[in-house]
Length: 173
Image (tube, rainbow, N blue to C red; front, side):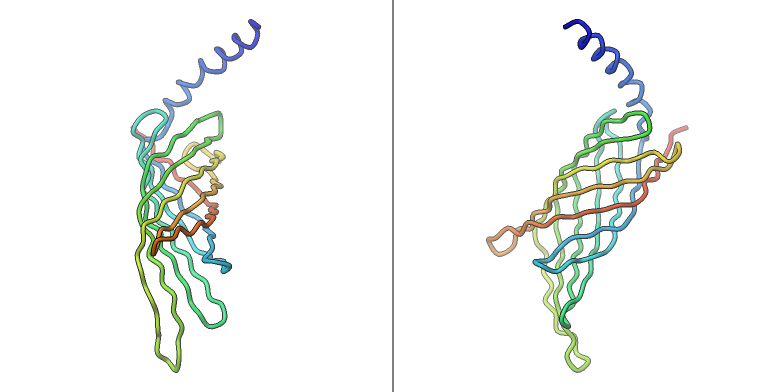
């Protein structure tokens, strides 16, 4: 019974020191994939995280996705923000976040050189998380998965969003 308590205290005693090394800001950019019904949409994602405390950051997140099938062109632009909670270990960071904001969706087709499209903006939120694997003091590779909800016309569409890319960690003086 004593051994687990001693191990837990030893493990947690190093955690504040590691958390103190949290950068004041992180910038992520990379590939992103989501869906629109059965259609897969590929694109990119960028996010900026500003540290509020050792474990909590404020995130601003934008991702754009595009696809076409059977002459129909579809795009989705998510713009969301919210808190991110992170645990920093040696060489890795595990995080979870909750984001809320909007999504601008566009579906259209081109007929005889004329673009016919419908564009709408709806409420969106996403929750999920991921892991950053340190490459150097300033760079990390990130993999993340989110579950996004889009509220439109009284219904809620549920879509996955997967992203992978690189994180640049801004350092203080």
